[in-house]
Amino acid sequence: MTELKMPIIGYMKSPYKEKFGIPRQPNLVQVESYIEMVEPYNDLLAFEGIEEFSHLWLLWQFHDNKNQQESQKFRPQVRPPRLGGNKKIGVFATRSMYRPSPLGLSVVQLKAVKKVGKSVRVYVTGSDLLDGTPIVDIKPYIQYSDAVITAQSGYAQDEPERMTVIWTESAEQKKQTLLKHNTLTAQIVNELEQVLALDPRPAYQEDAERLYGMLFSAINVKFKVTAKGVEIQELEELL
Image (tube, rainbow, N blue to C red; front, side, top):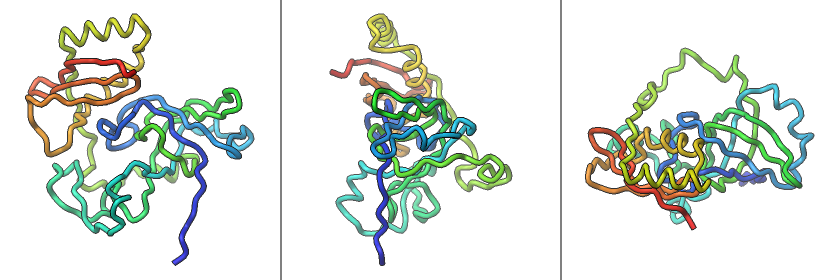
């Protein structure tokens, strides 16, 4: 069988610094990020006319999937988080990262294409990509053919519920300090709250006393999940 080789056209720059906490589907959180195009694809002529489209398809590579790198053995079944992380179903009936080909597909909203020095950047919102993710291709989203209103989505027919995000007194004080010193912005705070509202814990973990840590943008946020909601306990600056 002939091996398919695809060029990397750019790399995603996003506030998601680790896999933990990344929304499990695109467009659940309106986080802003951008694709840094690489030569020879950093040419504005390649994007002429793209401003007429509101959304784009991104084809990308799972580059930080250590389990798949260590073992190339095909796994015909996986445990989707949406089903609690316990029930197994066929890998081709999921969007699991543990696939024969480590490729992902996401729809994002186009904000702008800008020339920054010698770089060309494609700014988007709604991405579910880890910082540094290799981008293989960019295609326009076609509303009349790509949006299937009557589609059935099996176990993922409905959007996940969102939880209330609560700032403890100490975390609120730290947030205000970081905002004052420009380590945080109101936009980053809003994006962080959107991410935490989706409950980023693994599906099989429901320990109300456990303190979780998540890297996001330039901070490490520590939180608990209780019956009240997601409680932000601490904020730490990343050095």
